[in-house]
Length: 288
Image (tube, rainbow, N blue to C red):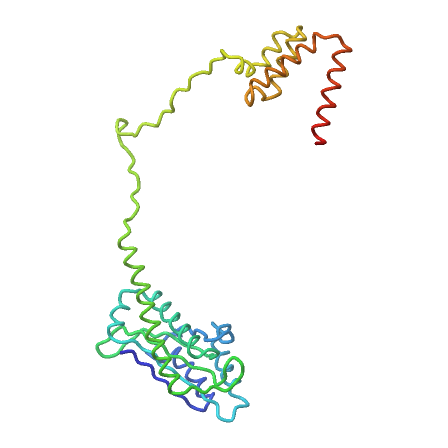
């Protein structure tokens, strides 16, 4: 079963000394090595990487309180979970523990602040047994004095176990998914010329046939250059080239072309009167 131990004392100076202990002295770290201290709450999260500032913050939080309560939590996992942690590397294990600590305190002790460190060492018969040491400030984020009842500590234990097991399931599913997904196969390069894959040849496009009146206007520019002296033919071909009426409504375009040719044969006065009447009719239609 999972184990959560919560002890408290009334000395902020002692809490400051415990910060150095969980970062350096346990496991006998030498050569200046230390563990990373992670923050609980926005204020202590901003002090990450500045170890001397964390004990000063704990002492400052204890000032002005008659009986400051400094809690220290030791949160472990059972043997079955420790065996499952062996499948993960150090970075994945630390990330899982950090997420579990954040979700546990945010869900049960909202407003609590402090620091924690992740330890990977075990004991007799348990060479790898990840656990967490957490030291809480004597004040909440709203500056109220900390008081944690035994019932709240029991809820912390239950939430801690639930979050760790959920994190293990997520990481195990990721590992199983990566094992099941086959690696992408790279295409092999052919050695011999006969083994090379032939390029896809595009189908032969047949040349269009210009044998209809609609397709005639695709070559209108050439026709205008061929017959530059024939004014009537040039106007007729340019009219069809500038519009797409033949494609939309061939019958209507033919009527308009015939009307235009007929008006060209009329005397000038009749032609102008006809065009004036057409303009008045268009104005009347727009007004309606």
